[in-house]
Structures are given as structure tokens and as C-alpha cells.
Image (cartoon, rainbow over all chains, first blue to last red; front, side, top):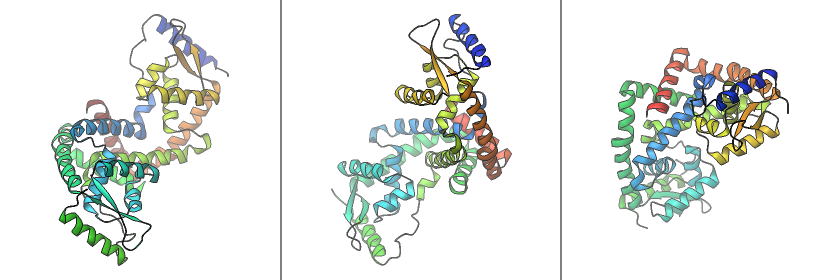
Length: 169
Length: 169
């Protein structure tokens, strides 16, 4: 381990300030971090996921589970691999998630008629009802607040740029 | 488990198409998913993290490790809790990450002069050198490509909106 003179000098300063109770508890400087798109994306994404969980708490759905239910509604009878690949979820994680959704009677796996090794997925009646309630909560609480914060035009511009990054970067 | 008539009908259709090899392998419809900010944020974030890992591969740094090194450079001599809290990293994960960085001689923990129970963190000489190389790779490969995709004005607008969500939502 070696510490440069600059680091020692800065460190001494840091420790001195801490000893003086000046920097203790004070906000750290983000510096270049605040200009990095990846860092800001991650922080915004965590904030949005937290709010999603709060808004959909009565239904106990995570953002990923909500995505799966939405995709099953739009694409009934597709197999596990197709759903997992579309959402970019790794197979073991996806199997565990499906186990959870199936045990709650929200979706069901059936053997494919044309390929006995593959399973097709479908929403149950309960899954359809829970999804409908979740959509309302997401629209009226979560997305409505985001709309309020950004304004509809900015929200649309943000969505377009994110989609561009996701598909073209 | 109960499946609605609609679900069965759709499911039958899905299976029939699969049997006919019409939908097999075809792209799924995202439907409402593509209009959800949280979903687009997550997909964009994953894409950006993948590219970051590729660009910084020679140095074997993850985005989170890079953030820690940047923050240590800007705020030498602060303690573990302050760094972890600022980055929103959970304590056990942060301790594991520091173990890794310290074993690679990139940073060092020292007992605080004013509070013997707390550790202050500092970059080592090697940490400072690796960080300087990482910054160059991020700027010239990763951020430069993002700039090219979005254009500087859009990039700035995107960053401002993400920061707003992270701090105000």
C-alpha cells in the first residue's frame, strides 16, 4: 500500500476537519460523478423503482413482476424463453419469479402443444384482475406524479431518449 | 388456478400460431411497457452499464467501483458510512466492495483519529493512477459514444431530467 503525498495531505485535511466536527455529517461533493449519465440513470432508476413499490404496495408487485404480467397479457401463449429474453431477465431469476407468480395464482405454465419440452405462459383470471388494478395504481399514482414533476413534453422527450439508448447504444 | 375464457382463447391462438411456426421466434409486442418510464430507464441503464464495463475492461472496474474511487478522490478522509450513504450502497455490499478495492491496492482504510470505531478512506497512489486511466477511457470511449448518439444538447437535457428525478421525485 502506498499513499501519495497529495493523498496524505488531503487525508490529513479530511481528518482534521472531521476532528473539528466541521465536515462530519456534511454533504459530500459528487464532483465529476454528477456529470456521468450512467450514475444519474442509476440514481433516477432506483428512485423510480422505490416509488413504484410504494404505489403498488397493496398488490405486492415488483416492477419486474409487473412487466412480466403486462407482457403475458399482450402476448399470451408465448414460451418462457421468449418472455425472459424480451425483458432481459436471466433464466434462473426468471424461473424463480414465475414460481412466485404461479404460487400466487397470477399466471400459469402449460406444456406447449408443439414442443413438449417448452412451456407456454398465460395469465389466470386472478392475474388479469391484479394486473388491471396495478395498471390503475401505476397510472394514477406513479406515472401521474412523474408527469407532474417533468411535464408531459419533457416526459415524452425523456422516454424517447431512453428508448434510443436502450435500442441503439 | 382459473383461466378466463379470453385467456384460453388467446392462449389457444398463441399455441396454434406456435404450432404453425408463425409466432415462434417472432418479436414480442411490448405494448404498454414501452410507455413506462421505469421500464425504459432500467433498459437504458443496463445498456449503459454493459458499455461501461466493455470500455473499462482493461482496468476491471465496475460502474459502482468507479463511483467509489471518484468520490474518494473528491472527498479524501471521509468515513465508510458517509461514502456508502452518498452512493446509496447498502453497508454489507459496500464492505465487500472495499475489501476488493483494498486487496487490489486501490484504496485504504485507516482508523479515524477522532473516532477509533470509524474508518476513513483514501485512494492509494495506484488507485489514483487507475482512476486517471479509467476517467480517460470513460470520457473517450463511453461518454463520447453517448454524446454521439444523443448530441450534446439532448445529453444535457437528459442529465438534467435524471438528476431532477433522483433528487426531487
